[in-house]
Length: 166
Image (cartoon, rainbow, N blue to C red; front, side):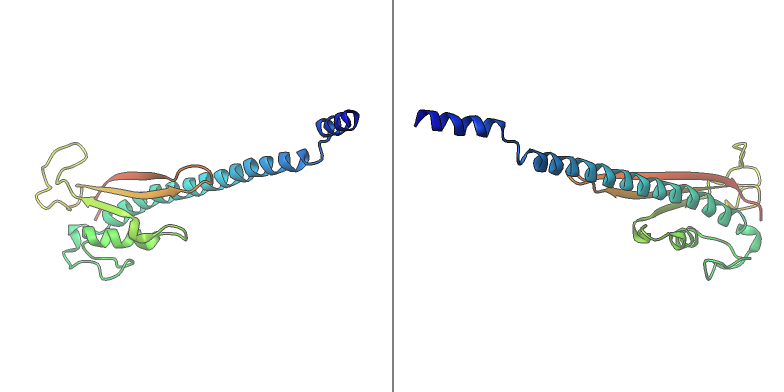
């Protein structure tokens, strides 16, 4: 009996029948987690690029819709020849949102500090007059969901300071 038991124990020590399957499972988990992480970072970069682009576009939208027009607020996102308000700029940026970006989560702040690029307030009694500054700030909370890691939320923000042209 001792010889037979010794033979069985020796056979179990050298039997690696399930080792490959276990190694494959561990490797797959690590590889798939890495692939999802790369995809999430690409989506984060895409979202950051949108936030940057939208701040720039909002600034350009605002600089051609200053007090010069003396008309009411812009009726649509593409209206021209009107005096843009903070709400108009916010609606414009939310309309730029690409697929995957929730427009309701975008925060847009537009302000007209009533001064020129040099810091002088001369000629800026009406804050959105020609030659005065408009400041746009756009932010968006991005949530990263990578398996096996805790959820992470990053707030992307971009700013644009431009001089009103019309």
